[in-house]
Length: 315
View (cartoon, rainbow, N blue to C red):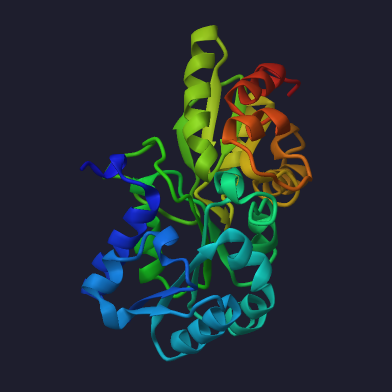
């Protein structure tokens, strides 16, 4: 099966196996959600000694991971985004970030992709709260190819990190040649009328929108940010100066995440009209992604409408 035909979670488990084969210090830590994360059975079958299931005890998992990291191990800790961010925030603060320990935290099923689990599990604020944490990098890869590149970077760098992981299959944006640098945004399309900024799960939709708007004569410059922190300010500012209008879209609350980062940079360096698309400061619910996109106004049709509105804005 081609890599782009596989679910993101199974690629996560497969890459962990590759990393463990290359470096036995890489560990897979789970909190009773290893099948959901895509690591069970493939990781314990291949590297049983590198796999630890803590049960329903996420705080214990993160605290233990910090101790393992202090001893030179490279622990990858996966669980639902709501547990990987909200539930363990104090342990992340003290044991991981304050101690600057090399722990890799993976939040699965971000935003609306948690659909059937409803509002309690549908975390729309993990990018915002993790981005506010000193010492912590925050990543959100958009497809399986970028996921592999991001995971390899995480394993090779000594850096406390949080990464969003969509569990299901995602449309391919890149190919095997993609590379990752946390300091670099990726310009997927050059344009002159409006800048569209996306991250993670929403980039696949942004690509389609930019292509369809080109057929209408709207020139969209599309910037993909696999790293929300650190944030490549220079690329954003250069694009905003060219187009005069910026639309952001993310699978998150519009407060504090990608849209917040964009507004912070532009507010200080290049005041520009910005339209933030995402969840408008509300909790989630059991619903399909299409329903939630329409309810909260950040599906492909809404992205296109916002780009048309800001295209050729005052410079």
